[in-house]
Length: 71
Image (tube, rainbow, N blue to C red; front, side, top):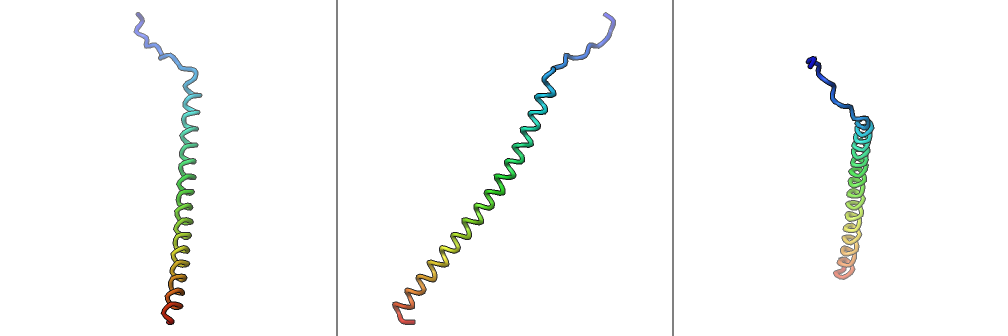
């Protein structure tokens, strides 16, 4: 016993695994950002269509009311 500390065994695939792990994490973060942007866009498009439908319905009802009661 010489009192020397041995270096831990080196895993030859550790660097490759870490590279793939961080690359996958970065890809997931980018994909999440893209999905969030798409969700916001879908929300605003749906809201605009809904407001347009309410306006069309309101104008139609108002026209029918004025025609029915002769306003």
